[in-house]
Image (cartoon, rainbow over all chains, first blue to last red; front, side):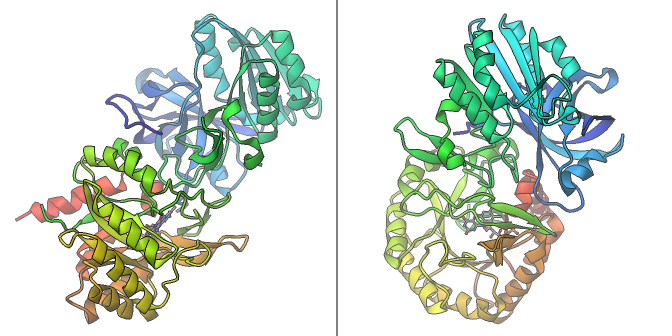
Length: 275
Length: 273
Ligand SMILES: Cc1cc2nc3c(=O)[nH]c(=O)nc-3n(C[C@H](O)[C@H](O)[C@H](O)COP(=O)(O)O)c2cc1C
């Protein structure tokens, strides 16, 4: 259950401003000022942003990066995958546009205490939170193997940049336009084997997460998977993003994807009920 | 401090467990209505549970809640310690369940009052006691009032249905309700046809009309208004028509600071000479 934030922690609700906007393949990268939020960020956190034109639900976006932007102090980078009218509106925000932003939200990735071997799997825009995670893991002396996957090259997130944050990078595309042709589920067991993985992190569609969690369990590795459920508020208020988990006593119960997740232990999700 | 809530309350089902609001509002003295609590835990309905519609949201949460026992053991004590004035929303599948909930909550330390959810948009689908007849709603209120101490408020939350609202408000007040809450979400359908409730600015004028009808015809009945409130001006419209307090729901999902902002502005007005 979510604890009440202590001072200096917990989410903030602020007005941000778009500082830069850049098209990259199928995505739009926005650099945004969001006073106070970058300082509280941990890898795996997301922000909830307004989607304009009177839309009442908000859109959850992974925090892709926090960077110093000189005069503006630290800023956030988010990746917008324009799949509907709300995200299209967001992707179209010009430089200087103001945006209500709440964050950082959600349980971040848990980091291992020991310098273990890690595999990070990100599908499409789901790779966004893995870049800052890779940096944290490297600081801790972990071996970082990054797998970025997508249906095609346009939906592949920053494969080039991935090479900077990880020791080894595997690129998988559905159409074979870059890297290996195929999909994560059929290759994950071998990837974990090769990396001799102790911990696996994954973000992407459910079938991929399930395959990753299963492959991790099969070799006795830990898995942390981040679910991308639609989150109407993102703040834990509405109960609109139910996620079935298996409790200590073996019973399945519903928790909230936004505050109890979005990162879950792979062996705690009730995959059958999740569908 | 008066036991009557207001001027601003967090509407049922829109404040999480209450804890999540700590980041966006001062919890001390905050009037929070919990999401509706049933005797047994309910896991709620399938996804999607909330969809956008112009100027509104349609929700089909299915009354997900941890059940009374868990609520009393974990959520309530935390909220009371944090200084929240907790109004527990109760929902039951029978008259006996409402009475049972009221009896057990009457012994729970720190409860500021009850709100009886007798205007859910889809009583039958959610397996709730059918109170579409004002007579049944009044019976539920009477049963709850018998079990709950008389000095604490019992609020009866009704659906903003103009054809029934005056009769309904009169009935529940005669049965012992301290105030009527108008209104709940309006019966609506999810895109796939599942029953749901429409909330947000789309229903504001409907709720306002119902409040106007009750305050005009039943001037002695205390009314708490809600539906689509997202600003001080929205809140003032309800108060100007005679509502004694307002509830804010959907706006919190869009901007979690809404209650703090509206509360601060209205309190400043109250303090002004
Ligand atoms: C996500 C959601 C959950 C709700 N859950 C409850 C509930 O459990 N019990 C209840 O009496 N009303 C519930 N409501 C209704 C609200 O409390 C409120 O009466 C209604 O939405 C109208 O106000 P609004 O337009 O400010 O949201 C819920 C509304 C929403 C949007």
